[in-house]
Image 1 (cartoon, one colour):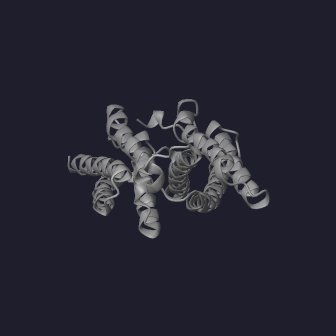
Image 2 (cartoon, helix red, strand yellow; image 1 turned 30 degrees about the horizontal axis):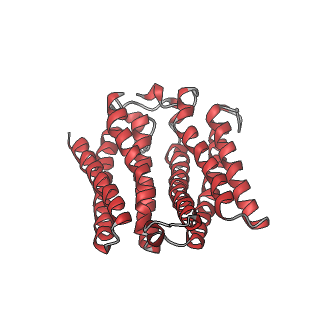
Image 3 (cartoon, rainbow, N blue to C red; image 1 turned 90 degrees about the vertical axis):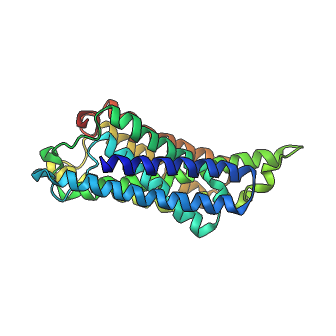
Length: 286
């Protein structure tokens, strides 16, 4: 199946890009950063081609026509892999901080590995018809908006992790060479804030879209489903981060720890809740 071959090629390129990210972390040769960027860009191209073939097969089922195939665990993980990697490429291209690849790309690699192994072992590559409640134009908007916000939060988590390591190095009496390779605390802190400042309104819009969709499908805006509840908790934590940053001047470790709590909720909302939520879970869409 060409779709599978293209995705495996993309996963291999993501893996190679992640490895180069770690090499660049310890060996600041600019060629490693350039090759990492090129491999990731080609990987995204292969991934998009694979997704296009899957979309064509998905649309072959009449009730799926013109909808995005992310109603399964496989489709959701695949979209998340693409979103995380695409976001990193944009950030790296804009800020030239390829060294952050070692902190961000492992998330994309884990998502790709989960797509390849967990998704396929669960029959995730099989094409199913959409449930009636999912046959809405919101299916093409709401999940994708949420995933974009999650991907940006994932990049922010990687930046925050780099900040904590850099801060620890600077506090050490004998800082390692890594200290001189990482960006400054201020640069990392500002980038972490900017990423979250972009992702938070996107998440908020996604939640509002979900409420409108729920009202159209079931006649109510909010049902306190597990994923609805945890998405709200996630948004509140990031709202606290932004509020305390702007009002109380939170920076450094305190701000990063708060944002990391938010990302832990992102992971639980995206993966963990699927095992307890019937409405939003992917397990029934294997």
